[in-house]
Image 1 (cartoon, rainbow, N blue to C red):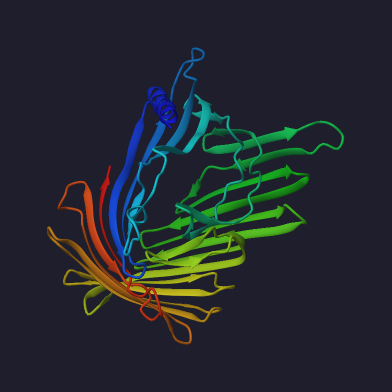
Image 2: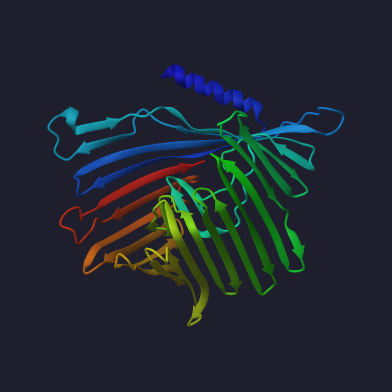
Length: 429
């Protein structure tokens, strides 16, 4: 273990000496949770750090200003000898009373060279990969895969994972890739893609891209375009992508649109085949569960700010997977005399599931933010009823967030209804 840590630390120091710019961040947190239903109490210590290396190293190869550059990312977690210690409510002995879990002290989560290139400042040749066909139609919503946020886009990409190079000049980008063995019966892979710079005509700007790839003996062609129109009072963006081929002469397409007319914004997205990953966020505490690759995915959002009795109110209406699962969500937020309030409601048509929620928060000097909320889900009866109250302070201790929260379990369930109380302190750097 000590040898592994030493090797990792030496590697970190070596890379720090190579890369010019280093950004270090992370957090450390301790929380104490008392679970009334499980009859347990536990400390939970967590810490993580992120070290990002981003630098260009320049050298004159000839007498001109031609140089090479590289960008890399290193991300690691700092663990601890003790992850958690839980104390049983009715221990049978000292050894049973405290249960511990250990973790590695230092763990590399990600080490990747993001880009390696040769350039003179006007043109650039990236040597790590060939650029796939650009994607222009993107969903307004955020899909989550683990801890990562991802755009919702067309599930099919042209020319992905074929090795090659990318050439850029004056905003134009060309990707070329090849992987072939010139023998009878051997599969050949190749690709060629093109992306244009943005062309502006008065209030309209347009950019496009196209490409073709032969992978695993199957030809795929595709392309896309994005057009923007903007004035002081109105703006609109429309984008579309199409892909033909892949397997069995399939056809995939996606289109997105966004229109802003103060004070209303409308977003819409459709894809014949979309990748939703794990779940799609609607608001902070509510998620629509995705299903990986989804067919005929349609979503929309309408948001606007209005005044009711001279009180500003923000209203957001969300529709997700409107052709299949048909999930609808509405939230209204406002502030009255310093009290921030919200009211939300949603309905999943195919599941016949309704949810309702209400909550408020108030921030006081030196005390911090005090908040509370109630949420429920209903089918033919109230299936779930949960509540929470808490306080969060970011000013009492400089650089630290102190918090305490009580969250109930399901109050209409037979068991696990009393919930838990959690007190925590988090230091972010």
